[in-house]
Amino acid sequence: MTGGVAAYKSVELARRLRDAEASVTVIMTEASARFITPLSLETASQNRVYRSLFDDPMAHIALPSAADLLLVAPATANSIAKFANGIADDLLSTCFLAATGVRTLIAPAMNRRMYENPAFRRNLDSLRESGVLQVGPSQGFLACGEEGIGRMAEVPEIIEAAAAALTPKDLAGEKVLITAGPTREYIDPVRFISNRSSGKMGFALARAARNRGAEVTLVTGPTCLTPPPGVLCVSVETSDDMLFEVQNRAGIDATILVMAAAVADFGPECRADSKIDKTDLLTLTLKKTKDIVATIGGGGRRPFIVGFAAETGQNPDRAEQKMRSKGMDMIVFNDVTEPGSGFDTDTNRVVLIDRAGRHALELMSKDDVADAVFDRLREIKA
Ligand SMILES: Cc1cc2nc3c(=O)[nH]c(=O)nc-3n(C[C@H](O)[C@H](O)[C@H](O)COP(=O)(O)O)c2cc1C
Image 1: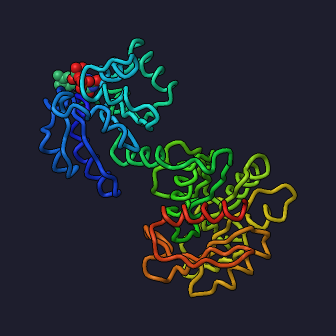
Image 2 (image 1 turned 180 degrees about the vertical axis):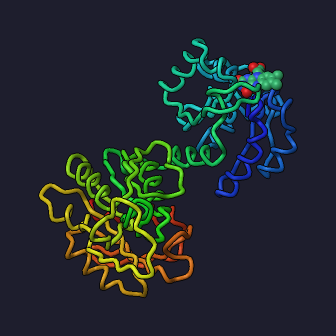
Image 3 (image 1 turned 45 degrees about the horizontal axis):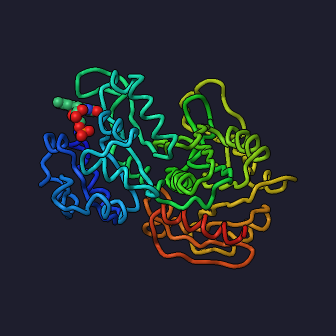
């Protein structure tokens, strides 16, 4: 931690990192202790807080040697200047210098004019060129009352960046196209048919693939979720829009297509151009929408295809049949009626089905399901 106003967020950060099962050791600069007491960080990290080079003579070597990740949040302009120029005049900057080979992530936070100052930018560029990772800052209202770039990234974003920094890049070189969320099939300009998909599974897949080093494009129907940073996000509404985007992108340069979207199976046969008058009785005639997976799966040059089968009831045979008939390489079956599974939950219990067999997984977070999908995919592709 260094001495910026955003230091108060580091208490929450330490707690959330511990919630994510990280072991956290805090090093505070003298300036940071003017903003937040070491006691708060000791409590949040449940660990000793280090402040001085001279309290523990070997700490400046032992701490970086023991770390998987050196995370500086907030990172002041002053400390970034020291890191970039090899200055080691306190415990943190000395640890930084001794942390060769340790993944390093900084979360800069400062006034916008400081952030835009060419002297600071040179230091930041030089750190990035030497492999230091950066999260944030974002635009917004700054503590000084000004508005602009310089706000420290929010805690969840820093944690996501830390997780990404720590994940082995076993999908590097892969171009992963993922679909997520529901589609909307319009009846008239104000009404549509849709479904309960929240998009959480598809977004978890996008995060996992990005963390594992893939170049990720996420084609998503309407959701309330924030697109994961570092992922190209394409928003669509209807199944036709989704088909168009997937067809355009899958054929050209995707190596893996993961169809986690709940694309509507049916849509109105015709869409009225103006709002349909309220009547006592309205009969809607529905038609089948185009099957995106079958369209891509039946094509010539195609990516590795993973589909999802959301079923009501335990029917993995039906999912396997779907995988084979649509030319998929793997399908993820889940029973959406099971507690904790399916729509709008943070967890899922799935069966991974491919041509070599079936793997039934326990109930787990959608993030863990996403990793399990890519683990299995790598085994099949190997
Ligand atoms: C109230 C106050 C707020 C400050 N906020 C920031 C800040 O957000 N970012 C920054 O780079 N410096 C900020 N500074 C300046 C740093 O505290 C100063 O450069 C200090 O030397 C940083 O030391 P350190 O990098 O060792 O923690 C602030 C100073 C004060 C007095």
